[in-house]
Structures are given as structure tokens and as C-alpha cells.
Length: 396
Image 1 (cartoon, rainbow, N blue to C red):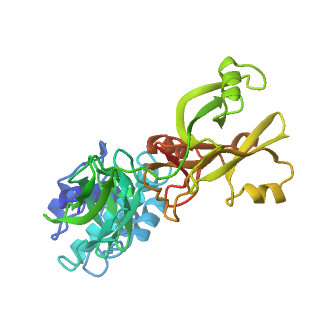
Image 2 (cartoon, rainbow, N blue to C red):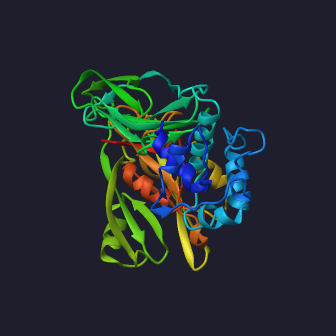
Image 3 (cartoon, rainbow, N blue to C red):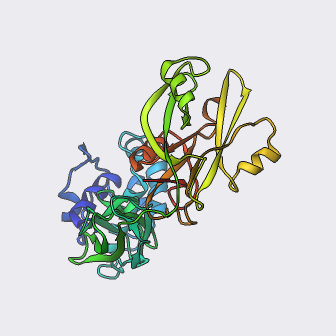
């Protein structure tokens, strides 16, 4: 929870009132700055004050208590406040700021009567599927719920951040404010460094209490890889700056043309990223072939589309004749489960769609969470299995 001093800073600036109140005058009037800007004084009972304060019934603070919508209306409809703190103002207040104000007013009106933040995790513990040593699982999502008044999470950490890594989520912002009945997420991955049973605790610290919320996580590291035959191939990624498109291929002939910049690969350059697939001549029985299609109807651009058998390949052939089948088995990959978890001995390949930006569809496939985040920030849409959109799984 934020301190009363913090709330007093916010209330001094946002309500812009310098009035003498026996219940909280010192707290309000002791602060003159918010975000580096001086507060402005208005006479008691003025329109600016009375929008959130009620001076008629002897209790000076009633209207905005526990009601962020009232705070928002006041800030964005009173000229004195709107120009500074409303939408488009000099120092606009966020929804979290307005919730802080409402919480502070409630604490003055009803001191000690609020329910403190109460954080719980769902699930409260979890066991990852067995994972080959030296590989990383797809992230598992934990939901952190707050059934009390608004609270702030100050830190999220793992007792073994080498094998159980905090991979993202909305709880990891510093600090992360969670409103009443709100929630945030923590993503955790499992990357065993040795074989055998492994475990860790994920600790989530609330500013308002001395004790952490603890999530127990466990998994087993294995030394074996998926059984069966299979010759691995390297799938190479290229980028065309003019198209702003990505292209992947394991074919030696295409790789040679693209590396040389020879038609039809003119303009395509390596990104430096690769991942493994299986050669189609002798793949493991549990792997699945990847189809590749080509479409030149987006003049002046063209595009390629990749789909696994049973997951878009056959449907594209049947329903979209403008997509020409270039290869029914370009390379083979493993399939993730419904939650985005990959088989032992493989790593997730995240599938991202450009949402038609630039007038032509295009997909990118990456194995790095950082690269995935970069593409999402650019406007790409996550597609695939699980919360992070795993499209397929690459053998180690």
C-alpha cells in the first residue's frame, strides 16, 4: 500500500484545496508539490473544492471517498484542475492515481474501516512437465488476485532464478498496483541445469505486509532427448526491409541464393537468428511436417505462409486457392500441448502475425521471449498455443 504521505501529496495537487480541516489538515497542507508542480489554493467551498468535498453537512470529505469515478469527473470538468491534471493537461492523472485519491479519502472518512489488500495466487503451486537439461519450457502463468482494497506489489522473485525464471507478467512492474478485486500475472519458465527433481519458491512481496505471498514450483530435469530417428536441419531467418517481412528456410539452395542476394532472393538478408527442425527424409514419428505457401496478390508485395499439417495446411489448400503450395513438407517440428508446453528435448517457437500491417500478411517465428516482446511492441499479434502463442517446438 502507498503511504499516507504519498496520498497527501496526490490529494494536495489533484483536489487543489488549501482548507483547514481538523481531521487531515496537516497531512494535506504539509505537501506543496506533486510531480514537481506546485499545488494551487482555492477558497473553501469553491466549485473546485466542492466537486469532491462536501461542505454542507459538517463532514468536509464525502463525495470522492472510495469513488474514483467522482474524482475523474471532478478533474476533467473543473477548469482549474482540468488544465493541470485532466486528460491532455500538464500533468494528467492516471486511473491508478485516481484510485489512490479515492482510497485516501475513504481512509479519512472511515479510518480503519477498509479491508487491507489480500493477495492470493492461482494456482498456489505447480509442477512443470519433465524438461531436458539445458532447455527451457514454455512459460506457466500464475494469476495473483486481490480481494481487499487496492494494494501495491513491490517485488517478484524466485529463490532459484537459474532454473525457475521469472519470464514476464503484469505483476513484475515496480511497483505494481492491483485494484480491489483486480489481478495481475506472473510468468515462470523451467530450465533445469541438472537431471532430477528441482524446486523453487516464487515470492511476491506486498508493500502493506511484512510477509510474502509464496508460490511453490517444481519440475524434473531429464538427460534424454526424444527417441526415434531424425536428422536435424537449421532453419535460417531472413528479413526484407522494403517489404518489412520475414522469411525462413532450411533449404541449402535457397540459403545460398539469399546469402548471395540472387533473384528471387534479392533484398533478403540474414537476421542472425536460426532454430532447429528435422529433415523430411527421416523425421521422428511424433513430429509434424510444415507446409509453405506463396501469394503474390498483394502488389507490389508478396508473402509466404507457414502451417503445420492438421493445423492450417490442409485448410489453406482447400479454402484459399490464391495461396500457392510451394512445399507440403518443408521441414518437421514437434507440436506443443494446449497450454503451449513443448515436449522434452525441444524449445518453444513463438508465432507472431503482423496483423496485415503494410498491406500484406506476414508471420515471424522466434525462440526468444525478448524477440517475441519486441515484435508485440511493434504491433504484431501473438498466435498459437498457450498464453504466449507457441506455434511449434524446435528440437535441441
